[in-house]
Amino acid sequence: MTPEILKSLLVEAAQALHWRADEVADFTSPNFRSRPAQPNVERLDGLFGLRLGDYPVVIAPIALDSPDQVKLALKKLHAQMVVARSFMLEREVINAHLFLCATSPTPSGDWKRLVDLLERDETVCRKVVWIPKKTDVQGSFNTFLARTFLAMPWANVGSVSDAPLDETYELAERILEKHGLEKKVAQQWVIKAEQLKDDAKSLVTELVQAREASK
Image (tube, rainbow, N blue to C red; front, side):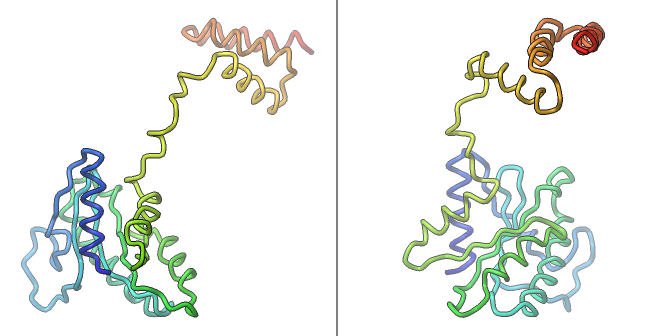
């Protein structure tokens, strides 16, 4: 499995959301924007740059061999992402991601720890690792996708505005009681908050009076 396959799958996923999905070769450039090219700078192999909606992405291969090798590869990828950021819009930089396509780890290797090492490191940008399964490429990609900004779990959840008002009030009351209010006072606070939601000054006065009266 290659980063190119990951690139194709990501483009399809973005297009399914009706997002733009553009390949950006500059993100893999070895040279900073607006600086003279330096022929001696090493170009990393197997990289792809994408702009998925408002998210700039660099796709790269990663070998889950040993902690030292992973750290060395990560150092090079960080340097590449710093270069890529020079080609991004200012508002995009905070959304930059490294999507890493891992070679199939050996069963005896401590690859889970290496993945954890990679994904916990948010230096320069966020990182997510894909370990493709040769027998189920799409399934393994779907699992990977669910951990990225391309996942939309809220799409299958009913709007909060659909919740019955009684349930919403009860939730607010339980939270207030949890933080020390008596049940009766919590009920009064919820009612007054609804009645005086556009009059903050009066609301504060009413809430204080309600609590003082209960003492």
